[in-house]
Length: 147
Image (cartoon, rainbow, N blue to C red):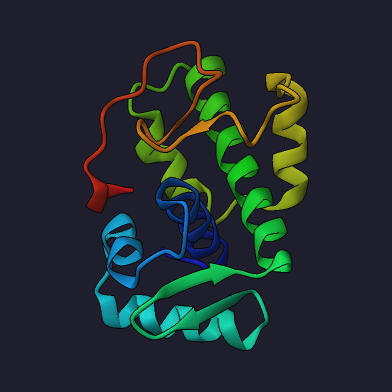
């Protein structure tokens, strides 16, 4: 399930990695959706004042979009670290991607107290491995369309 926060997180990571606007194609590839689906959600994010899309140039998050994206990324890191470091779930990345859409702020805050989140979070996220750098186990390499 690809929620607005998942799109914001993805746009943020792509924008940071590419050091500029995120292309619709890169966003679609990272989420494993069609460019048309990505365009539709980007339009909704733009309507909400969370992103600015310039045709043929890409998408940039607004200040509000960046705040929401960083919150979503932090929640993802919390889930990932809980699954990997506390529960020792082997395929923690796939599980984290499934859970991120359904974990609310209250649950994320409670998980956070268990994992002892690092102050650098969410800057601990490594887009190359699609994982939190504070994991006690090595992440499994992920193909872009699986992110």
